Every structure is written in structure tokens, then in C-alpha cells.
Image (cartoon, rainbow, N blue to C red; front, side):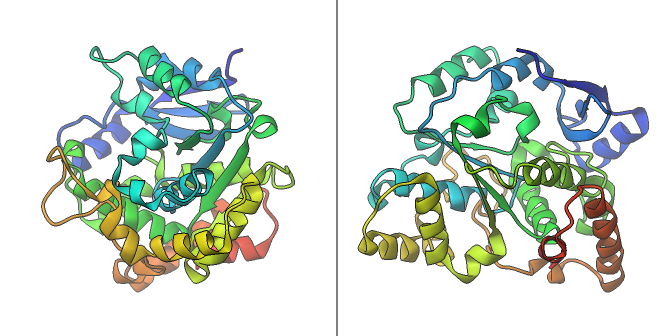
Amino acid sequence: MEAKYKYQPINIEEKTIVEKHFKGNKEANLVKLVDENNDYIITFKEKFQDVSHLFFNMKLREDDVWIITSPKCGTTWTQETTWHIMNNVQLERTEESLFARSPFLDMVAMKADDKESPEEMFQKIDDLPSPRTIKTHFPLQLLPPKLLDTCKVIFVNRNIKDACVSMYHHLCLMKHFEFDSKFDEYAEEVYRTGLSNYGGGPAYFAMMKSIYANIDHPNLLILWYEEMKKDQRNMVVKIKNHIKYDISEQQIDDLTEFMKFENYQKSSSMNKDKKGNWNEGGQFIRKGIVGDWRNHFQDQEAKDWDKWIVEEFGKTGITDTKILDMVKI
């Protein structure tokens, strides 16, 4: 089965902007994916063209649970929580590599090279024992077409200004991006225009559109980062009920306490840079607060973004104004 989307390389002007912010030019070879109607889906490395069929035709299992989010929207937090619910809350295993316990599917498109082919990487995922907790930042259009009908899916969203701030700090942390930019320039020239891997703001809204088109599907659970922060225990209960796993009230309490940000930040395998890939002074699990954007956006910039958010939200077809309030909170 072939996916129904096509590729559009970024133009020379856009490539110049990317090269301004990413000094090593490693991020300059980007393509935009659009659907049959030329509606934007996502921006990604051009090498995705060579491996897209592996994602689209991936073998699914009925007991798979998928975590799907735009980047920096609480993915790792939800992934770790869900894995523990599915594995009898083995908190002592949190220091084990999360990627080893719960595959990050997108790594195939980002890391596959001559040392390990994309096919070999997918085979390792296929060889994992059930049940699998699978994470991706790719939208439904790039994933197996029967995903929602086959597996439980958890979509997590976050207000877009905080997502932008968190992505900025993520790029600053990772050495391999060779990222060099001031926040205000990044927010306007890169995130808001989608000129980066995963497509920033435009891809955020495109993913919302594809997810909310399936809002009534029984296999889909939609969570919001801000609500999860307010009531973490309720987050655990919602997830366990959705994926139909039974854990005790004590395990729920233990997991809730363990996954509080200040606790998880200390224990997470994701906060242990074992290969020297990080710039000094940063952490993968960084701050975890709601409203950090107020420390980064100037007043006029925030007003401009709110106007842009309303315009982009209007294109999603979502009519619930409460969701708009969550996006721009």
C-alpha cells in the first residue's frame, strides 16, 4: 500500500533561513509533505522519502499502544507513564533506557545509516515482545492506515507558545543540531514558518486537524499537558482506563508521585547524557511548567502570535472554542 502524499523541497530563500539558524547545514535538506489536496502535513529531512514506506506499512499488533504528539508537548512524560501502566509499575526500571523499553519510531528516519539500515531498525522494533509502547511525532497520514482501528492511541497536546519555547531549548541542548539563534528570531523565522525538522507551528496545527477529525474514535484518547499538570493522578487513571490495564490504587498513587516533574527529572534515563551529545548546563527533562512562554515572548510578540493562532486554528475545522483557549493559554 502506498501513502497518499507528495514532497516539496524547501526553496532557496527558505534554505538560507535554515542555514542562518543551523550553522552546520545538517538541517538544510528539508522537504515539506503535502496531501492530495496540497494541504500541508509536516516538514522533515529529505531522507524520509527513502523510508516512508516502512512507516506506512509497519506491522501493527492489537496490544500496541501509541503515543502521538507534536514535539515538546509532554511526549516523554506520557510515554514513561504509559509504559509503567503496561508493565506493572516497575519504577526501578526507569533508569533503563526509555528508547530500549519503548521505541521512538522516528529515529529510523533520523538515524538510519550504513551502520544500521532502516530495515534492520524496523526489524528490531518488530522483534520487541508484546505489549509495545510506541512513540512518534509523526501525524496519522504518515503512519499505518489501520492504526486507529487496530491500536490504542494517546494524543497529547500543549499550548503552542510553551511548545515553541521548549523546542528552542531542546535545539540549544543538542550539539548535533549546531543551532545558533536568539529566541525571538527562532520563533518568528523557524518555528512559526515550519522551517525545521517536524515543521514547528504549521505541523502542530496540521496534526491537530488530523487528530480531531477522529475525535469520536473509541481507540483515541486526547490529553492536554496543562490538565495533566493540574491533576497527575487523573492522568494516570485516564490512561489506564483507555488502554484497559488494571493496576492497584497503591500503584496509581506510587506512579503519580514518581512521575511528578521534580521526581522524574532526577530518575529519567532521558536526563543522562552518556555520550556527550549535550551542550553544558542543559537537561532533556528541563522545566516542565505551564506558561514559561511569558519569560520569552515580548508583549507585542505574544499578541501577534495570538492573532496567528486564531487564524491557523480556523483552518483546522475544529469549532470548539475551549480547544482554542487551550492552544493559546
